[in-house]
Length: 250
Ligand SMILES: [Fe+2]
Image (cartoon, rainbow, N blue to C red; front, side, top):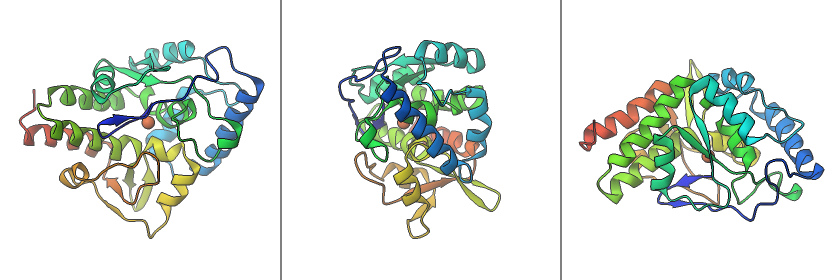
């Protein structure tokens, strides 16, 4: 499930639900995991590489949400919210985040959609996001976005916070020494947009909160611009700075 700007993408009808997947679904999951692991290995950020072994995904079988929730809860105190067949508005989304629940779907894309699915599916969420949520420190930063969002008084502030989330955790880059690495789950789980975003000619700007807040997200196409964090701590500073700037601090 994705949140972007003031909309949230809905998912299609549930083709597979936990415990009720076809062998074709498991094969799709396996192909996605194997292919994407090779692709992200040289470009994913440190936090992803540390979190992935902790997450302990089975590349051969689709994950069971309840088992994965118990595993992640034991590591970081986060739970998984069931987003199956729900339409999450941004407020509901950030209410989950504030309560340390990460919304996930059970939907897996169809075999002919390996490269691109217009509907967020569990490959994006489990492969792209959940490695990060094995780390309590990362979880604390994510939760801060939910807390500040719920304090927002205007739609403009809500939109800005959603974009700071979007261009960080979903589509962000991060500096590691002289290298540029990928921290955004939307890139880590999307072979097509990852290769697009990595091209030198695609603009990447410093993660300036006001510039990010003014940049529309793209839900159904590749982005024209990306932003670079100096570190994961910088993503925390971004929401804290915005909260201070707008008088939304606790
Ligand atoms: Fe996402």
